Image (cartoon, rainbow, N blue to C red; front, side, top):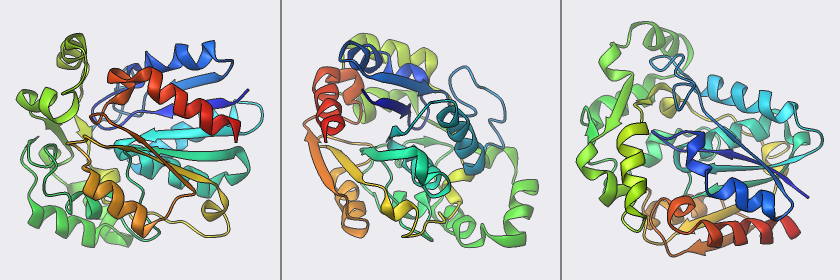
Amino acid sequence: MKTFILLHGSYHGAWNWHKVVPLLHNSGHSAISIDMPGHGLDRKKIHSASLKDYVNKTIEVIQAVEGKVVLLAHSRNGIVISQVAEIIPEKIEKLIFLASYLIPNGKSMMEYALLDRKSLVIQNTVPKISIKLVSRLIKNYTGYKKTLIDLFLPKKFRTHRLSQHIFQEALYHDCPPEILELANVLLTAEPNLGGFEKLKLTAERYGKIPKIYIECLQDRAVTLFLQRKMQKDSPCDQVFQIDSSHSPFFSKPEELCDILKEIAKE
């Protein structure tokens, strides 16, 4: 039996995994889904939530579990599981990146996101992503300048939303219609600051953890181009594929669970 810790992606929450958790439980595994700060039922710090806040929340959950865990992240929160693995590698059995941001040491999530010019998410944020502004923030988000940005960045630049008209096409084009209804009610704004932060990873800690990538072949949010660009820059030990949108936990939960069970065997 394995313990899976499941991290949602941008805009979502622990409810992301409502179809997957019972399937894993029925297979004899344990599964815990988490609301990241500013998401789901945890609405604290939505305008100030940092990568450190996400990492600390995840570590708190992991430390309450006996033994090692399999840590899975969807989409944006690949950056979280990477940084968690650097801090507590002794607690991590495997890292699973589900159409997720797989970022090398010294780089930020937004540096890679800006490469994904065909992403329907990147094209449809509210407010619109200013490549010039984001590039400046990435460049300066370190040292004392990071502190100044954290203190003085205007509130309107601290979060963004996905435009509601694009929910289905960008995230759920192969999902049951009730998922769109849930999304219309439950999707939240996304804190921005963590996306500017450069990861601090080492070969001796993060590098020793086995990594698995699950590609979503019809993904319109983190496109297959970017998924494979990230794998080229940070090769994984195994790669699986699902012929799905960005949200296989809604559209193909049984197939996703079968992959997770296969990973758990090895």
